[in-house]
Structure formats: structure tokens, C-alpha cells
Length: 416
Image (cartoon, rainbow, N blue to C red; front, side, top):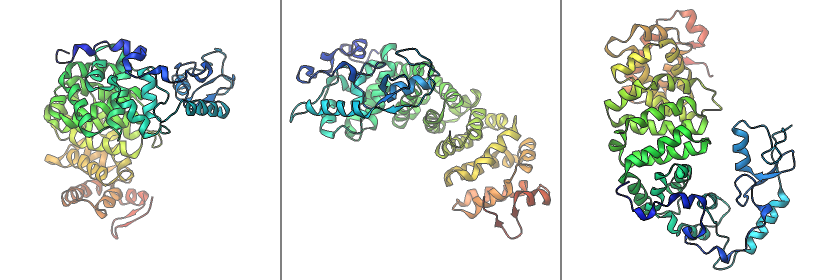
């Protein structure tokens, strides 16, 4: 806070959308008709869709309304007999014609608020020249964006804009570095803002954006960021409670943080990362993508690399082993190797834990899946771990192995 330019701390005015703060001339663009604006966001609609009540909204706005559990039309407050969203193609064409009429060799429609500016920059139909012009706004300078983290009312907007700029190919590397440096210059304020979004954001998209910003900060200064223990707490809570994309984003952050040292791993274990990771592995494959599960495996193998992590894992060994074995071959090679590492650390390292060995012996299909990993492109170290694990899994009876569909004598693997 003390290191930031005080002239940029009028962030609440920016959020309200004062046109002059964008340093762009709105007077040169024809104002949009009122029915072009979404009744929820009050901004020009990019993808107008209609509810069964006949009222039209921008798709992203009404989808967030419905995803929040609402079952009424925001304008009429009538109960919805259907939540189907029907594209309003006529209105979409009219908006397109209006937008085209505002375009000349020098001028296009200029958004009058930072939130609309973010929507325009993320619009895949907008041409690059237009986006480059928008990026020249003084409101998008690194110090100005960092100042948005200082006010609670602009936090969602801050993480959305910063995440967007860091992901845009149109933004040059030096500008991205300057933005990250501005956020790191007052890390306490930045972390406080990110944590507030993780805790209180209404929409999952804001949590995803916050996690992506944090991921960039970790990549730049992992050791410094890892020193903020509150982040581990919130990331564990995020992967335990959030859905799909937010879980994936949170796991990428944990993957970056957990390699920062033993203290960080111990803090994550203390905050319940082991049951949270198991929960991710147990969730529906459609809801949680394989890439997220692979990251969960990578975090898990680091977590059980310390005594506290192995103790937490073995406290509920049957469930945890079953989760790891169940998703072992449904991830990429790196995830498979991590899964073998998890099982080896709890079953074989230092003689292994009796509870983990017992759980592994009865894990469905465990023997065959270890063989699948061994026959794949695994490293010599993982292959040696797998050999040790075979001794554990072969403790099952021959009938159990037959039920799993594997012939260990010929190492013939029945396809799944």
C-alpha cells in the first residue's frame, strides 16, 4: 500500500465507470439504445438470450443468475417453467449493425466502465486493432490496476482485469512483468485482496480469475508468496468446496506452492489437504477433468513426503488408497508416476504403514494397474517403486487377482 502510487487509489470511481477515468473519448461513439443493454449488467449485450418469460439478457449475466440457484426471472420475478436460454438472433444482428455503424478508420464504440472494458477485451469477435487501442487506456496501467486491490468493492473487477491482461497474447511480456511487479510490490495488500475473493466471491469465475493471478505470482516469486500461510488455507478450502474450473485453478496454485519447502507442506497437511485431494479424486470424472486429478496426484505425492502427510493419509488409509488406485491410469504419465510415488511412500518407505499396506492389498485392480504403469513409459525410479509395490499387492489371493481381470504370470492385461 505504501509503495503504490497514491494517485491511483480512486479505484471505487473506476469501478462505477466514470468515462473520463478510462482516458477514452466516449463522445465520438453513438450511444447504444437502451434495449441493447442487459437488464442485469446494464452493459451492451454480447450474446443476447431470452428466457421463457420473453425477457432478454446477456448470456453470461443470466447464466450466473441461474447458477446461483435462482429460479425466477430477474425483471418480472416470475417463476421459470424452464431455464432454457434461447438465442435472440434478431437483437444480436441489430447490436452488430449498431456496432458496425460506430466503426470508422479511427473510432469504434468505447466502453464507459472498467467492467465493460474487460468484456470487450475478452470478446473473441473483437478485432486485434480495437483491443490494442483499448489496452492503451491509462486505467490499465500496472499501478492503476494494482490499486484496485485496495478497495473491497473493486476486488472482483481487479482479479478479472489482471487475469485477463496476463493471459492476453496482445499484451507484451514486459507489460505483464510490470503488472506482476506492481502486485508484488505490496504483497500484503494483494494477498488480502485475493483471499477476500476466494472467501466471498459470488461467482466461481472470480475465484478462477483470482487463482490464475496467484499462479502467476507464484511462478515469479514462489518463496515470497509461499510465506503467506493464509493462501494455503484458502486454496485447500477452494479445492474442497468449489466446482470444476475453480478446483483445477486452485490445484495449479497448490502444485506451485507445495514445492517451496517442508514448512509449506506441513501447513497444507495441517489445513486438511489430504482429504481435500482425495475428495477431488473421488468426484465425477465429467465434473473434474483428468488434468485436475493429475495435479491432485502431484500435490499428494509431495504431501506424503513428510511424516505428517503420511500420518494424515494413513488415518483414513482405505479411502485414500482406493481413491489413488481408482484414478491411477485415468491420468497422464506424470500423474501415474505420482500415484505410484504416493503408494510407495505410504506402503514401502521405512517399512510402510500397516494400515496403508492392508488397504493396498484389498484395493480393487491395484496389481493390474501397477503393471500398466510398469509397462508404460515410466522412469527407472518409478519402475523400482512399482516392483516394491507389486509385493504389497500380490498379498491378495489368487481369486482376488482373477476377479480384477489380470493374469500376473503372463503379464497380460485385460483392457478396461
